[in-house]
Image 1: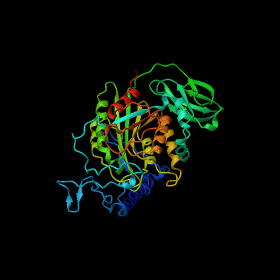
Image 2: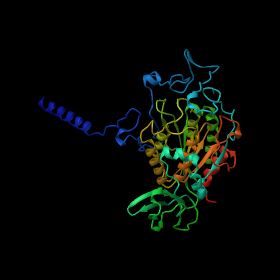
Image 3: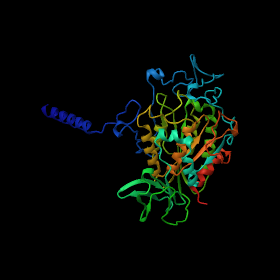
Image 4: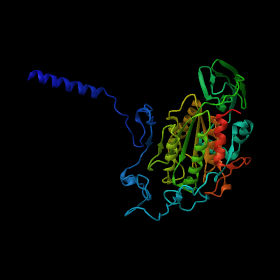
Length: 450
């Protein structure tokens, strides 16, 4: 009997010791972020084959905000996205979704209410929305002139932007390139398939000695606006891999165009998947704002393109409440994904509102700019798709982020007749084309050498 008791006690001690040494799951704070990593969510990519690291940041099912049942007050949807009435789910006619007028700035056209569940497949055809592109990196002299526009001053000051001093570098295709000052790295970028890379520095460093390095290549220079550095003359090479990300604002103000955008994006995905000799993965992601049903709903990169299309089809617009949205949280989430080091990395950011201000969230601008610099260091190109209702704050930020990461600026236009009013960009010299064609062209420009 005593021997049996000793065996039982020994087993219990082993079990307790194992529990004590086991790693506890990361704690979650009020907005669903990982408190073991400075408040930033880190996605666990140690998944088994066929599994994905999908999840939600800031899932909100509190009694105060969603009555404890996952439903946002005033929403016609339940927590599963189904249409609801007090007596149950809709089976016939559907009520119109209430537009949150507080989400639109003054003098912006507010769309008519849209119907829950969106528009049935087949009622919208791809190629309906129209768009333009401005790639400021193609004309850095003009970018410097534009940067001194008085109309941009308030945004630059409020957001702490320093994007006027750009160094154009010619390096080996897809090589890492750094701007260094002694032992300090001032900026890091990744060259595109043509070997073009862009490095930024602060105006206070003008006239200082620095060096541009990439692998064993190195050139000294004196920092000056518009500097050009040629490290090598390598031939352009088409990419073998593409990681394509979509990050989409799904707040209420997107309701006038979201169903059209979904159709355009699905067409883009289908056309890109048909390209030969390219290994493609796609990640579709969605964001709203603090206090909404979710802040960011993210999906890992997938080779199963049909899965991505299905996820995209399920999304609908809701929430928001004020004009700014959780853009900063969405940008941070871009960095948490499992990007392949040897792939072309493109992030299309679909939005109609700016991030919150410094008055609302302390240090938001510094954190956001640091994340965009990290995108540049990883070779992730920021490509906006600016929708109706966006103001000059959105334009200046999105064009700046494109310059910082080697990306480009896309925007919807009024030519389609769809949605609210689309603000003209500061430059008026651009070509109008269907959004789907524009996006496919841009993707091919980054992937296939001409």
